Image 1 (cartoon, rainbow, N blue to C red):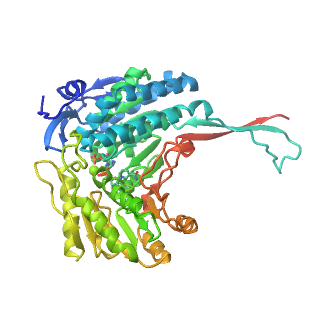
Image 2: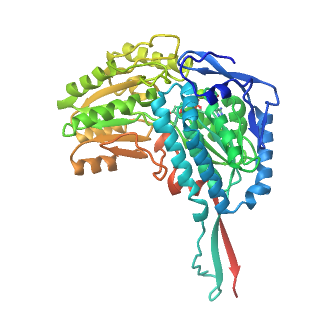
Image 3: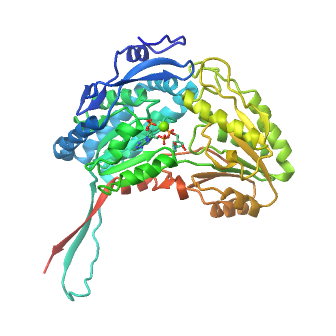
Length: 501
Ligand code: NAP
Ligand code: MG
C-alpha cells in the first residue's frame, strides 16, 4: 500500500486504495494501459501518494471507442427505454448505498471537507442520476402538420424521433470529480449513448469506483468506459477522435478553446462548461446577515475551486466597511485541516500546482496595490493549504479582479448605484453566474435582466438542481447541462416523411 492514512478510513476505502494498480475500464473489463504506463495520485492534505493509476493514451481511447461502438450495435441499442431507466435507478441506489465510501475517497483525493462531499456532492450526484433515470421513457418526437407549397393537395405523415448521438466523450476537471462524472454520464446514458470518461489527472479515484458500480448495476459491457490520464494524451485523443460523436467538456476556457480546435475533424458536437469570474452584488437594503453568509460561502465553498465562485464581491458604498470587515473577520476564524477530520471547515487545494498558482495571484494582488485584509499565506503543514484571503482596494483592471483564480481569494469592491454595479459586473469575458442581494423585488429583477450570466441567484448563492439549466454566457461556455436542455444535446433529431398520396 503506497500511503499511510492517519484518519479513520472506511475499510472498503482502505481495500480500494490498497490495490497495486487502478486499471482502466474498457469494454466491461479492467485493463492495464496498452503502454503499461501508470501515474501517481495524491492526498492533497498530506502530499502523500495514495494510489497508482493506469494512464490511458491514444491507443486506449481507440480501444474504448471500439468497445463503445460494439455496445451501441449490440445490447445497448436493444435495451428498451424502461430498461435504461431501471439501470440508472439501480446505479443511483448503489451510489447512495456506497455514499460514505465514495465521499471519503473524494475527500482523500480532492481535499474537500467530508461534510461537503457527504452532504453536498453525493446526494446531488444520486439525485441527478434519478432525475435523468426518469427521462428515457419520456424522450419522444412529434408529428408535424406539414403543408408543402410546391405540392398542392399532397398529403404526408411527418414525424420526428430523437435518437442517441452515438459515442459521447466526457472530459472533466478535479473540483467535483464524482458529481461531474455523474452529471455527464446520466444524461448521456438516459439518451441511449455509449460513454467514455476521462477524469482529471488529479482525481481519478471516485470515477474508477463509480466504474465498479456501473458494472455491478448491470450495464452491458462497453456502455461506460473510464480512462484516467492526462489532457494532452487521453484528453486530446478523445477531442480529435473521428469516431467520437460528441464531447462534453468542463474545465478552463483555455483548454475549451483547444477542444474546439480539435473537434473540427469530424465536426463533433460540443458542449463546454468553462471558467468564471462571477460578481456577487450586495445592496445596502439587503438582509446583511444573509448576504454576509452568501459572500463567504460564495467564494470559500470547496476552497474557492468552483467555476461559479463569487470571486468579485460588490458592496454598496454605505455598507462597504461593515460588510468587508464581516467577511475578513470570519475568514480569519476558518479552521483548515485534512478533509477527513469532521471539524475541518476548509481543506487543502487540490494540488501543489494549484497552490502555487493561487499564491502567485495573491502576490500579484499585493504588488498591484490591493489591500490584504485576511489570509494571503500558505497554511501550515505539508498539504496544499492556502488561507482564505480577502482583498479590498481592488481596481477592476487588476489581474486578481479579471482572471479566474480558482482558489480561496476574493476581491471586495464598493459601488454607488445599480447601474454602476451592472456595468462592472458585466466587465468580464466570462458570464457563468451572478449573485444579487436586496429586499427590493423590482431591483432584483432588473439586475437579473441586466447581468449577462447563465444563472442569477437572488438572495441565495451556489444552489443547483438536476432540473435547472446550467451553463455560461460569453466565454463561460456553450450549451446548457441539466434539465430537459441536456436531453436536446445528447440526442440527434430525425425528420421522417411518409408519402400518403
Ligand atoms: P483544465 O486544465 O481545463 O482541465 C480540464 C480537463 O481537461 C482535465 O481532465 C484535463 O486533463 C483536460 N485537458 C487538459 N488539456 C487538454 C487538451 N489539450 N485536450 C483535451 N483535454 C485536456 O481545468 P482544471 O485545471 O482541471 O480545472 C479548473 C478549471 O476548470 C477552471 O478554470 C474552472 O473554472 C473550470 N471549471 C468550470 C466548470 C463549469 O461548470 N463551468 C466546472 C469546473 C471547473 P488534465 O487532468 O491532464 O489536466
Ligand atoms: Mg489541468
